[in-house]
Amino acid sequence: MAGDDARSELGETDAPQEDEVALAFDRIVSQGAQRLHRTWREVLTTGLAGGLEVGVGVLALLAVYAETGSHLLAGIAFSVGFIALLLARSELFTEGFLVPVTAVVAGRAGPGQLAKLWAGTLVANLVGGWVVMWIAVHALPELGTTAIESATTFVDAPLDLQSVCLAFLAGSTITLMTRMQQGAESEGGKIVAAVAGAFVLAGLVLFHSILDSLIVFAGIHAGGPFGYGDWLAWFWYVTLLNMAGGLLVVTALRLVRSKELIEREREDVRSVRVAARPGRPAIRRAVSRARPGGSPTGSAACPAAAGPGSAGRPAGRRAWPAGRTPGSRTPPRRRAAGAR
Image 1 (cartoon, rainbow, N blue to C red):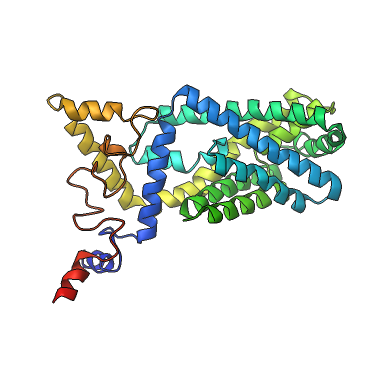
Image 2 (image 1 turned 120 degrees about the horizontal axis):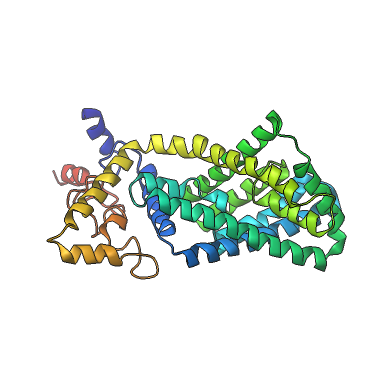
């Protein structure tokens, strides 16, 4: 306890974590809660847009690889897709292994909502990407040979240790990219993370369930000697291993690192639920209205969704006590010492 008190004197929170960790955690939980409370229409449309944008990145990848024969340069070109995802605020299936999962663990949503987000985004990504690849192959038939050559790398890959490691590493890499973007304070920093993630994923030809599926679709559209059955035989295990790589490496470590913050978030959610029981209709109505598409999630209308230090927090919130908010640069104890 004495160590925690001494540590809190050095930062803005009274929790035994660095301020940056606490702020990043609150951003992740808030964004995750909003994404998990999307309707089916919102899930499918953002996923479809994500597939279209990744498809543009794959088009750039194929064009550069056809001209240079360099996977590394093609990986940099593919970053166009990740940058588009970032700036357009679309959804990619493999970017859902950190932010939404953290929100579920913190009690902001349930496993069913996570399953809806994952399933809807996965299907919509594939559909959007399939459409873009069909258009690209017919618009630029000279890329067909490159698409078939690149797709053969995946559909002919045996399920061996190398394939397992390539898929596992891809899941870890894309989730690390997400974590880097959550920790960045500026759009420029997030774009750097997107370029780095694209370079590693596409430049090193890791097995990524969405990116490489679109390359296979392009090869099929171009008349390659393989079909959707060959793609499915590769796709199922790559998807599972992408999930394992993201969840077991990056996400698990972040959850362990934020253990105290997660416990406090759960306490806040329990407090709101208690306050929303019969006899407190006003609060219950406010909570029920605070859904994306209606009242903004994370606002004071929904205490469970509000960020730390907001008016929506229950009075018992300990992570940001009275007098200490994320915008307060001088802890109360320091001000008291200065007054003396």
